[in-house]
Image (cartoon, rainbow, N blue to C red; front, side, top):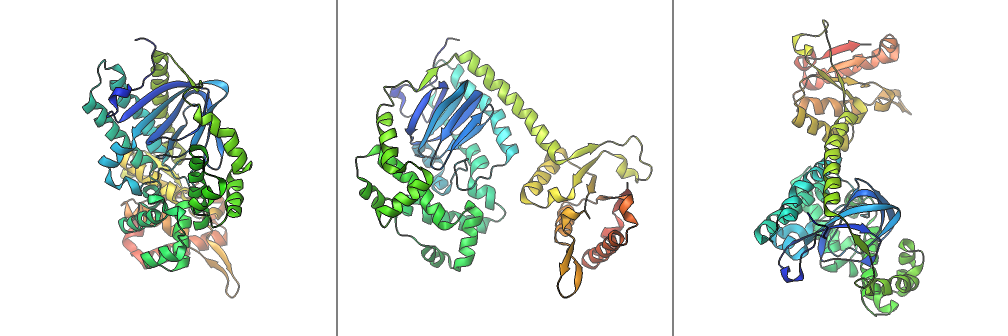
Length: 453
């Protein structure tokens, strides 16, 4: 196979996917009418967006939303990078709800990506794009089919709202509407307020603020300004409008507010930013932004990276469980003679931990589970009440037990022998059992096992 750059001829505008293997030099600030995935296969690069510049190393993946301004440039290391572009019109045509999706990247106000899903995507990339690279002819139907698969996978892995709020279809639909009010049709350039959105959704202001904070990791005003400044970058670099016009067009009531918030994201200010970057962007087709690389080398490195991602999926499982195989376990009943997986209770007390647990149940099919640290200090069982002294708080413990009960798992709880005879520890255990019996009855408790270490 000869050395060549993988790109589509201009005569094939109807092709919805473009793939590039490159050595990045310096791409000045620019944006595309496409969804862009960047994966570093060798070395490292820098990528800059609205509010920061970050280092991408070998194996790192970043996704950029349609028309999201960004700059990519080299580090002192050599690099090999694959970028995949999915045409925006094709994506919107095939996924009508795409306008309610914001792909979560490291430059989003909030990032929440399932690590296992991401590693699985990296595994699948070679299988998806190699048929396009190996083919001597351009098969439009095949390109559309693969572009469709990529968009579907991007939504599954990177959709910020779905990843953060996927527990309830009603909540997800409402979250998408709230996001719509802010982002779509450049609504953020208008004088929208929390009160406007609250009235549309019949919510009080405090609860709406909580929802936005949960979705974005920041305040409504920060999210609004984040999108406004991103839009201003395109106007500064893509038009000759003056600063006042841009400030007003981006939704700021006066230029001084635009300067204030722009300086928060780009300390040099809008004038200097434009001066440094506009000429570079204008010459983007005339300057050397990248070097084409040997295709065979690129494919080999991409395949190796995918194989490494497979190992990372396995390692991610092991971050959450410890496998303990028993040669003989007389103190267990027969069903406990099978391999038992060890979970730390505190790891099952947040959303990520519970998602990992559910994934492991699905993939591995665990039957027996041992729980360590159920009554540890991390579980915050003992709290001090001003009026009544020390009280028991079973919130985290019951969160773990309810998760097990929901999945029809009867646990083996590990107790520390050096603590078992302490009055407080024994009292906690006794109180917990009584509390659980009062909620679920005796039958559930009879199926529990205890291991004393």
